[in-house]
Image 1 (tube, rainbow, N blue to C red):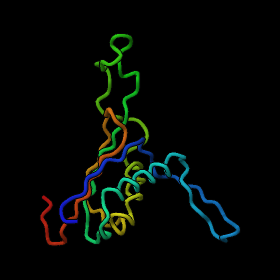
Image 2: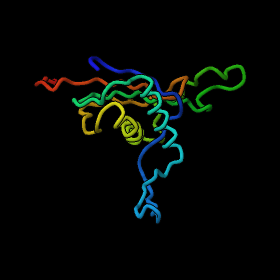
Image 3: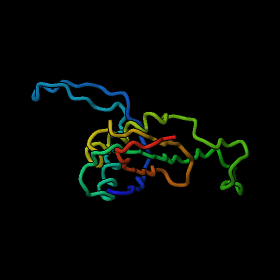
Length: 153
């Protein structure tokens, strides 16, 4: 991949974070599973759309990961009756509600690991945000960074 990879993952973004461990006698080891029942389906969606967008070799160079998480506005941000499609003046501009941005990044980044880039330690620059949008999901942009001495400022 020379320039950048951009793709959209539809669906409700889910956080990655807390996990529970279960001992499996047959395997004689502990298996870790996410506490949120929405995390695995979200990660599966990210993997599916990443594979549709990219089929090359795993990136080995440092990468910039840009993710815009799109969340639906709550119904109480809109008027009622004939104003049902009109945004109230009091509606917040940004989603300052759960899930928090860091945990959304974690689940999405983990889903991309081993598909696009070898390891999440290669992510050396992130540009991320949560916004309200008409369609739930995430816009993901991955840019390889040349391993030359590059001035960041």
